[in-house]
Picture 1: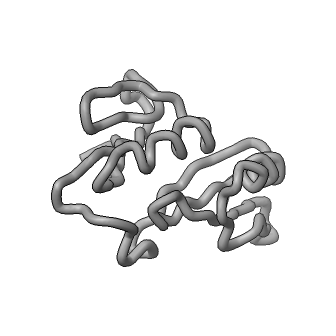
Picture 2: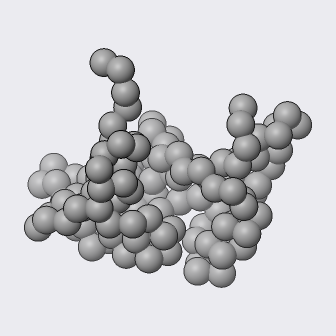
Length: 121
């Protein structure tokens, strides 16, 4: 293995998550089929996020801290302000590690944890 390709979030209904990640977060739809969508780079040159409907997933995430989706931005303060205005629930405000890395944490509509960062560790 030499490269990370994607991660997926499964839901009992794709339409619980697709509008959030596409319209609120602002990720680009690269591929769409019935029950599954890939968000991010269409050429798979960069890591992508898959979201889809899965028959074995029911309701909100029972252990949302088991995995976290990580997104990057050039303007963490602006993104947090924009997401809050859209009603996104933050569980950690933007904070600096003191070495130039900023992180903030929020939940998606099913309780999955998403972190955004700015800078380098």
